[in-house]
Image 1: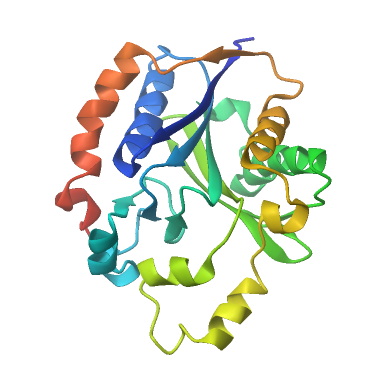
Image 2 (image 1 turned 30 degrees about the vertical axis):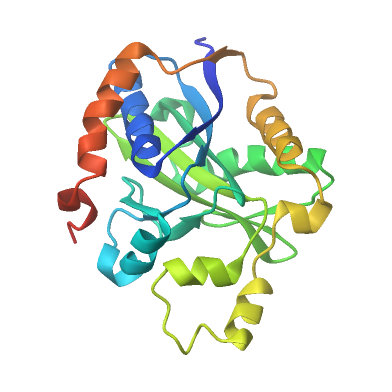
Length: 248
């Protein structure tokens, strides 16, 4: 059985983060890389949109540009997400489809189950909320997205460490009527964070999720290979292009 490769917490901008994930997917497909678990943050903070969304519909582009916030289209589905540098931990898991359940629902449940086990280390009791969320007492703490391409599964997702709903709304296209104190309070009642639930440090969260993702798995700590880095720098040209980001 091939060992997993674990790439420890890194910081990249939005275009590199998406390029690295896709480059790893291609290398695993070509049997040049082992299945991979990767942890990362977004520097600078960014907004990502799902593969089938419209950037202009979803994102306050002017506000992002003026504040130096990246915006990028993912190859996975799902909705628009604000990735705050200080506010979340992001992971990706990439491997042959045969390593995961065929059912999309079951594969989400399996992968999210590992995040839930990690949160248990912090005495946080979380549950899987189909199809792709993790909740605590009904409040969302993690969103996840997946694609399957040429026999390879890629899932990435975020675990909220701290949340600032008004800041999030300022970068997403939310109508002015919705950005009311009442609406913000309503969202705050439906979303929670690791810090709000337990007060632990970001590093403690990372250590717990690392344990959840690697427990009972044979793995090696690894790095992005030079070949993956070269391909990622080619893919970056696409991910940072208007043709890709404004393709819908």
